[in-house]
Image (cartoon, rainbow, N blue to C red; front, side, top):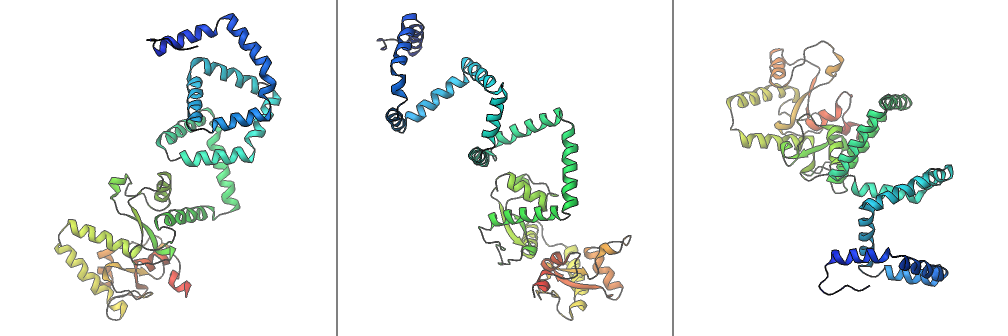
Length: 343
């Protein structure tokens, strides 16, 4: 059915529709199908059709047409009726369940999810669907809590293992495969941490978002730019430089530095340095409680200048040592630093 001269696309479509609804045209189509149905089932015809679909533009046009039909009212109704017909019987349900559990379907779903899970619209749709499910199933949260409790009873270190796995994944991405400090090359995982090249405000990260919470957010956002990996020492120096660039040297800062050197010198037998790795940069040195503070419950915790004044006024008591931020963080509540364990 050819398009007439000066006929618009809408008029041509209406005329085509009217023509296809004519009884003689329908009968002609049925007879044509009956005569050629055997021919269309042959392997030669299927191969010919497959090659035709591989031509550039043919597949895209076909998919666009199918998509348009599925979005139409008639298409939606037909799809719904067909779906109900398929899933209405026990055989249909079993077939669908079997298909969903097949390795090919699972692999396709995983690939599809990995490609789209970082898109904002997908995240929002998933959040809405999860909220609807929780509202409809109040027992879901209780079930989740019981499941987590059971897993923790079976493996008390489950949380630590998950956090370590997440940390390695994030650090591996931002280090380009080799996990090390971007400034000094330190490769001990115990000493490394994330550093904001862009400000936290720019990246919409709250000040209290650190550790696993920050790592989880970075993975959810698809590992955005503006983060690098530094050791605790280099990270502290980087933050100090940023603060010094904003504010001029004050009398209080000079006083704090003077007290720090005065308190640290006796514990280092001369020039202040780390008791573990011997680094002597005063900016990264700190006081470490040889017996962790957490063991003395109820005792007042002193930090910074207050702790330095306490040590000076009490004639430098025992139970303290000088460590750099790397070694102090690594030792934490343990008796040894990672460097000492490594030796």
